[in-house]
Every structure is written in C-alpha cells, then in structure tokens.
Length: 398
Image (cartoon, rainbow, N blue to C red; front, side):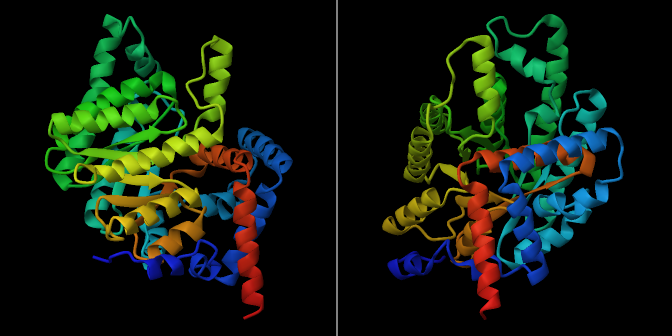
C-alpha cells in the first residue's frame, strides 16, 4: 500500500489542471468550458430549464441537442452498455465508476420491477468489472413515497398499506441479497427528511443481516441536518454492539430548498443547519469520527469540497494510513470537480465518479436539479468554469 508522507501531500494540488483535464481532448475541453460558461449565468439556467421542459412537453425534436451537451457532460449514456466508454475512460485515469440509474418520478409496480431489474444489472456489472467499486439505488425507486412517509408517522402504516410496504421490502431484500452474494458494495442514497427515518430503519436492518463479514450495505448521511452527526455516532456504536460493519457515505445534503419550503409550509422547525459553516463543521467532524473507527467503519466521502478532502488526506498522513486504504473512498459526480477526482487518483487515493444513466427524457429531472444546484451553490459553477479556462489557456501556451 502507498504510505502517505509530507512530500506526497506537497505534490498534490487541486489547482493542477493538467492532471485534472488530461483525459479531455481540446474539443472536449472547450465544449465543457462553454457548458459551464452558460451554467455560470443563473438567469440563463432558469430560462433554459423552462424552455427545455416546455419543448419536451410539446415533443419538439431537441433530444439530440440535449444529448450532445448537458446530458453528455453529466451522464454516461442511456443504458449500461452505453456507459462502457465512460467506465473505460475513467478507469484509464485510475477512477472507478458508480453506475446510477437516474430515472425518477414513477411510482407503480411496473416501474418498481423495472428499477429492481436495472439495479440488479448494475450489481452484476460491478461484480464483473473491477473498475466499478460500488452500486447505488434510491428507496423511492422501489417503494411508494407515501408509504415511506406513512411508516415514519406516529400512527404507522394502515392495514391496507402494510401489504404493499412488505412487498417492496421483499424487493429490497432481493437487491441486498444479490449484492451480498456477489460481494458488491451497495449505497442506499439519502432522501427527504420526512421519509429518511424509514430509509434508515430499513437500511440498518439490511446492514445487520448482510454486513457481518464486511461492509456491503452503506447508508447515506446528509450532514446539513442538525441531528445527523449524533445519528452517525449512534450508528457506529450500535454496529459495534451488534457485531456488524457500518457502511457510510457522507454528503452535505441535496434537498435544501425542498426541506426549507416544506418546513415553512407546514410550520415546523427546519431540520437543517442555519448556515453552511455549521454543515461544514459537522461534515468534517463526521469524516474524522469515521476515521477514528476505521476498523469497523467503511466509508465514502461524497463531496466537491476541496477543504474537506485536504483535511482527510492530511489526517490520513498524520495517522500513517495508506492512501489506498480499502475502507476509504472519495467520490464526485461525473462532469464535475475533475480537479479533485483526477488529482486524488493520480496521488494514489481511492476515487470514484457517480455516473448517472437512463433515457434522456427520464433523466432530465436529475439534470435540471444538477443545473439548479450548481447555480445555487456559492461559487461551484464559477470554480468549474475558472479551472476549465485555466486549462484552455495553459494549452495555448504549451
């Protein structure tokens, strides 16, 4: 294993655009540059989102334009087979792929079965290809959202809904059993707070069942929630007491606007930190807590925050933890933060990219959220744009 040391850390720079964009041709680089140049204009993102939704609704022939621009930047393809080139491309840069079937918004038995089959395919693909270190899914892909919410309330499920809930739970067990049998690590993504307790309950049950020998099932912790650091600490304690490994994916959180709007409409206290500083503090504290229990916790840092990545690699160096320790992964989204992903991978750390895939029309909700999130996160799109511009200029001067 690669032992970290001071000289390694001094050579690692998230400003190194030569490494960050080494896999892009000049054409690909300029294309990404123009995409982020447009996304850097908040008003244009809102206007573009409106018109794309309108044109899709009216069945205007804009699929090819979408596919060759924003879809190509952030997605791997329409099918797993379409993602092969992306998987190989990332692997050549020592980066793994996490295939994410990103079809959203359908809640019926046919869609649940289709989603189940697709998740099972991604698990099989991860088993067959060492370039794919994890599989991932959302509970709302196999459960009706209202059932997850109902389960979480004081009254719980009605008798009529119990059967539907148990049916979806059987699908969940089938998915987790497949991951266990094939020894593929499986992320359960976090969702909205009004269904997250149910997701946690189901996920911990799967962990207790399938994580006896290693971490197969991973729960996701959104650290923008005020209670999440405590929840994580408690989860570590319970996992130790019940003798199973805890799989952890740490993120800051993806539903900020929706959470605040619902809290306002239903007049309850927001479950989120009031500012980014408190979220950052809890994220870093959770990250170091996992490091304190590395013998029992396997975790993935899902972040585009350079400071958190630097803090972790510095802490790993202090403790003499190898760069490529099998219990620690970094992850970013495809098409974003290549300066983090490629520079970490080049330095020998375990890195993977989330690679969304699915039919263009079905993946559009994901892409709209990606564009809106990028424009709302202070400096995120500007940072991407600046890095791309720096590399364009660097190549001109070579």
